[in-house]
Structure formats: C-alpha cells, structure tokens
Image 1 (cartoon, rainbow, N blue to C red):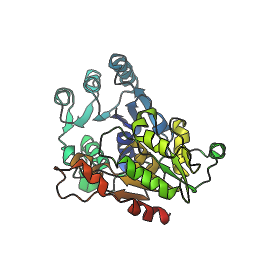
Image 2 (cartoon, rainbow, N blue to C red):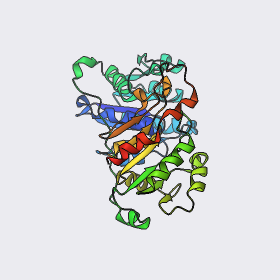
Image 3 (cartoon, rainbow, N blue to C red):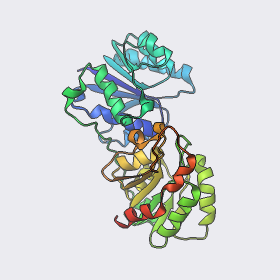
Image 4 (tube, rainbow, N blue to C red):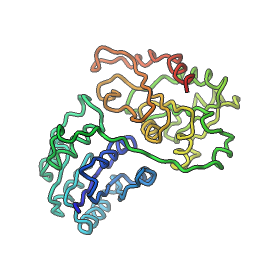
Length: 328
C-alpha cells in the first residue's frame, strides 16, 4: 500500500478546498495522511470519511520541524504533496529522503528541496482552488488530467445532531437564517449597511442568527448595536465551539456569508449558501467560491477584474438575496 502525505498549512477555507482531492479514485488503495495547521483538526474530525492527520504550528516552526521530521521517519511516506507550506516543510521532506516531493514551483525552497515541482499561476484565477490542488496531485503521481475522467471532488462535512443546542437558543431546524458578515480582509466585502438592510427585512418573518469570532468584531459591532432590542436577531458571536457552529450552519434555512472559511464550511455541510464575492481577479469566485449542492453567488458585474473600485460591492442588491431566501 502506497503511503501518501498531503500538506496544507493554511486557513479553513484553503484546507476545505484542498482536503477534497484525496477522494480521487487513484488514491483509493493508498494510506493517506494529512499535515494541517494547528487548531484545524475539527475539519478532518468532522469530514466524511474522517481523515488521519497531524497538526503543526507555523509560528513555533522549530518545534514543528522536529515533530514533522519524527513523523516522517515513522510514517515513511512514498509521496508527499505540499499544497501550501513554509520552507521548513520542504526541507523536512528532503532531509528525510521522501522519494517523491511534490509542490508548487514558486518560492526558493521549492526549487531546492522538491523533485516534482509544478508551475501554477493561481493568481490568474482561471479555475477553482480545488482544481489547482487536483492538478498538483495529478502531477505528483504523473497522471495526465485527461485520463482521470473525474470531476474535482467536493469535501463532505458532517455535523452532530444537537437538539439541546438548538433548544438552548430557541432555534428550530430550517427556521432561521445565519448571517456571518465577518472576514479576515482577504477580499472585498459587502458594506455593513447592506447587511443591516438585509437583516431588517429577513427578521420581519424569520429568526436571524449572527455568528463570528472576536476577530469579526469590526464587522459585527454596528450590526449588534442596531439590533440589540430586536428579539428576532440573536448574536452567537464567540459562543460556539467548532462542532456547535457546524450544527448551527447545517440546520439553518440559509447562510449569508462573504468569501471566508464559514462559506466553505456551510457548503460542505450541505447548507444553502448565499455567498457575497469580490470581482477582483485574485479574489474571484471562479477561484474561491464555496462548493456544495446549493450555493448562490452574488458579485458585482465588472468588466475589468484587474481594475476594480472597492465601492462596486454596493452594486449587490439586498432584494436579490431576498428573492433567493424566499425560495428556501
């Protein structure tokens, strides 16, 4: 049985767009392990099927390098594919004599330590991030894309049944809408007044649940203040463990969210997702859209993806989202 190590030391959305590729048929009889960022174990733990993995901290890289080299000596992978990782990961693969060391041929360490590098200009956003990841995996195994005859898989996540959680917050399955306006700033977002306008309309007939972390406070502060007296708007910011957030997303009528990890989580859980996306080339939904059975994309129509006025996000109309919500 061939041993395959897949590496992505990145954020939640990036990991979800990568972990899906291990479902391709030619890995069916392989022993596949993952190396992921510390704190993201809830993704493979709630994946279907569950994945085997180790977590590493990019910040504490010296200790992580030691852990990785020890793991490599014990696991002895035949193939390692680095989808995104710092230099010391490439070095560890080389130092521990992994036979096939694949990755994106870009930074200096990829030329020095990898022996199956692939040039990819992902910034052109000509296809989805998951497709780029599959291309890299195919290159690692020297498989022609045309011979695969498979579409890029979609990661399936599961959420535990948690009636007690819903009862605690007086929520009924498919009777509430999640609005997650926060993001890390990696893409253009919808203006806060637009989120407020949407929530005002939705909350007239449907419970609205706000989600987020402390890092999302700049996006949620004005929204929470505006609706502090509205009993139909419930803030669960920083109150949910990852598995609980999965349940809240899965059981929602719909999830309204910009281009951030929660969009990918909700889509992989099978939720209806209303995704708000930027037309900037490197942020475009062609590359970063959530992938699932019921995903709706909202994006300004801009002729030039390389010359975008940030104010263009105002063009996304509240009524267009309301039309989709009315059909759910």
